[in-house]
Image: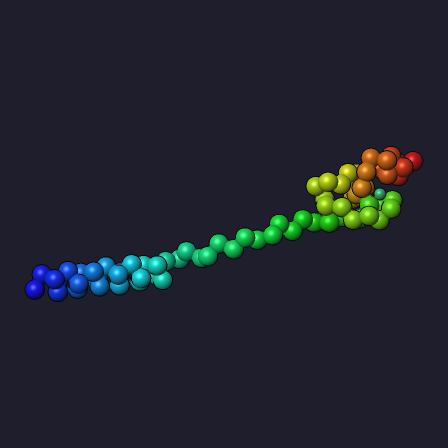
Length: 72
Ligand SMILES: [Zn+2]
């Protein structure tokens, strides 16, 4: 008899766990690739990630040389 109760309890626990897992608001974490904003060099047009570019005003440059070149 106690075996039956044990099985019932086990079933109840499993049911609650299952319900808890499904009802949870946890969303599967999906690794999202970091998309960086690409900017074009104002001198040569090479596209570089914004964080790696040199910028002055609204313009971006791929390297210091081009930054200087445009600063005439
Ligand atoms: Zn450039």
